[in-house]
Length: 394
Image 1 (cartoon, rainbow, N blue to C red):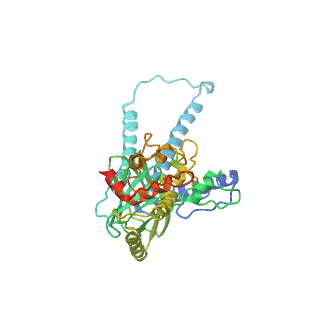
Image 2: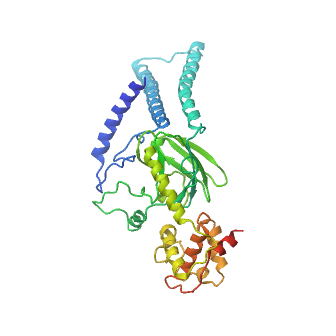
Image 3: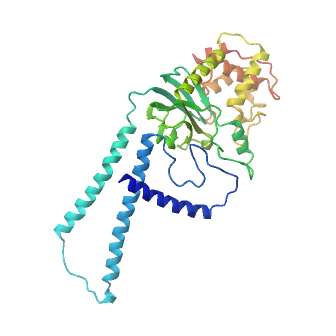
């Protein structure tokens, strides 16, 4: 049965792809992105998990079954209308209900629905079985990036934030790719990919810090909402090494389109090497929250934090854009009471238009505040230490 469905699906896809390619005129030099999406893609992403394979099979099974029923029902109906039309001399029959017909048109649809529901239920149950995971990762949605924390399994303790690559954002701000540019990964490239081992069951726990987001990777057959104050979970087991892409699938604000997901599936050996490298980086970055920084050092550190987390909205010049308020000359930045700006970064403001940045370390928040207070035209000379942030969190 599956082989017949696959052949029918392939035939339909080939015809659709031909029609699409004839009608499509490329504005850019585009090419397929390994892991999807592909140029002129009409079908689902190529599956790399059993769940995704089952979803694709269900998709085509349901589509073909419904198409056959549609054609059969309307063919009989239109044939009957034409064959027994009044102009051909036919007269309407005068009869009442037929018990046999009513039994048939009740039993047959019931059987069809059951045959559709059984395989679908099996897949849905499997999708929710997150037990016995080899690796557990928390994915936290925030406007507009993803935070990842490896909380169980190899790599436990690793955590980072994945944002849209700055070059992609700059390209978008300048009107998108120029004609002739290869844009296969446009708005899908991130600065820190989520790395997982091949053939291992990975449980993804989702939540959010502000509004509802959704973690979705089509090649894995995974889409799970990330809701503030709630914890949801899903899972996947990637069977092929490679790079796979997705996006936030819940309308989450003005930069919803700038919230991509990049999952890098590697061999067990490469994953162990990546874990070792990340732990060395974490050890090197470990900050002592009681350390007293010099102005020069903390401003340098703050410049890096600003470029990675703030420049996308407030711009490198600090001038802001559109509804984004400028930091250059901002009253809260110039205010002698540093507690006001600390409160903004810890709690956000304007109903989430400015998100909270509690996920940053005390040193990172202190550094970026000091940087903004002493950059551009803001020459306040004020210095914020990590200890100030530690105190404000209490």
